[in-house]
Length: 166
Length: 422
Image (cartoon, rainbow over all chains, first blue to last red; front, side, top):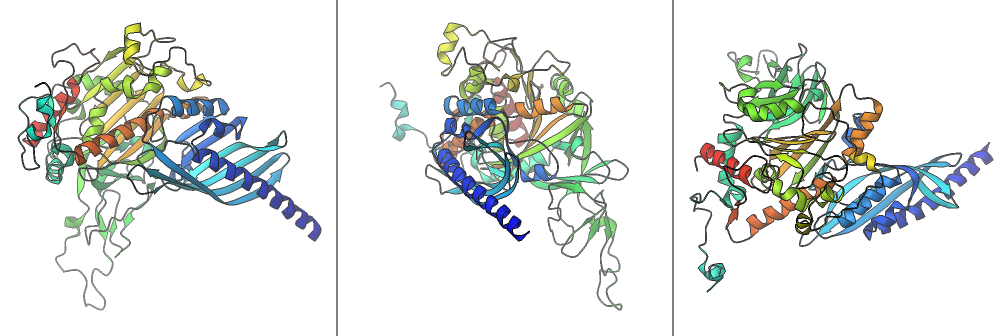
């Protein structure tokens, strides 16, 4: 019994290490505003949702960003890079407290905390978003991909606008 | 010499104390966006004056006992539905020491108890209990003649139309219908058509800008295809769409109405040149986002209504939302975006609305740009040498289908000057 538990926690620890690597690369991609690259962290049918914590806890489904499938993410990436007007900024996304919660067949359920700090021209750095990821990862062709990332943000009162995904 | 009038030394410096409104109605002075005393006058003359202030939707408080936090002008209020189903709007400030007692975004309650000294109010805002009112062992407590009826929460008059809740401090206010006027009321009723709505969620953001600039922005069809290249790129709206820009007779309320053409819009070559980012062939990878299922009894697929002072109501394709502007001093306001669908939407229609809402809100393709542009605009009027802004486009007597115009902005400021006595 003890051996079984040990091997289970060892598997989860290995999964966590893989997800941590994934999240570090994910953050680096968004810090570089490479939203085309960001899309490639997801499966074709992935669901990506950025939702205010008060809506989530009240059972209200409205998302700040709501993407059903990679095609919608590609459209957002295209719009951001080619149609959107916004002030120049530096982005700093930190992903911490990564946890692999359960493994069910090919799927890994995981969570992490995230903080997005934005710095605009002649403004002090400020927290744009602080929240938690609820993730489902799968392995495709030997690499981890997100099948679902739900970003539940505590920072319900948004400072002006959220330009880039988290 | 040409351009001499632009040399700084020759420019008349308007200062904060020079409050003459420019004789030319196409000029708007900076100080209405930046000055604290103007803001305080707006509270008195506008938000507490003869106006209906939007405070929420009935679908946010569907059941007896439901409440939400909201605002009348800058003032925090609570909107409740009492056990008899009546709606009430009262200040969120305990009559005793002034505590802002209601701290939850929304909820359900039988009463409100101020956490400081447990003064208790019912869902109408009436004071129902004061702990130790008679003191202890005959000592202390409230004065013998303390009249609880006099110390309820200060309340506003309430009216609704089509599920939209309004509040006013004015004792002899006209009906919502008369307040809106026939032109705007007809468009209001086309969106708020009496069907039951279902709340999908609320977005909240702080915008470092004067609240009036948001109303101006939604009275300004000129910017739509220039700032929002998402619209033109993906064919949601182009300047050649059939449009109409009605206002009420006082100029305070307005609408931007437009009809989406079927298929790709046909933009004449000469107009494409002035639309910086027009891309004729761009299609979405996922066209579901822009799919349109007609649902309103209206020829217009898009209707943005600006209801003075602080409501905007949007029906764009299948997006339904209201925006409440909550002033927080002259240089900042809070926006509460309430997004809804219809109670009889099936699961697929709800998902369609959620997908489509990527366009609006503080991370929406249009929302990002409006919020950024208005922040830049406030930076300009707040930091630069004072000057007058221009609202020169179009004519005041033009046909209402004219869209390269600032007629509705001029109309709002004629009304504003009148109310503010500037």
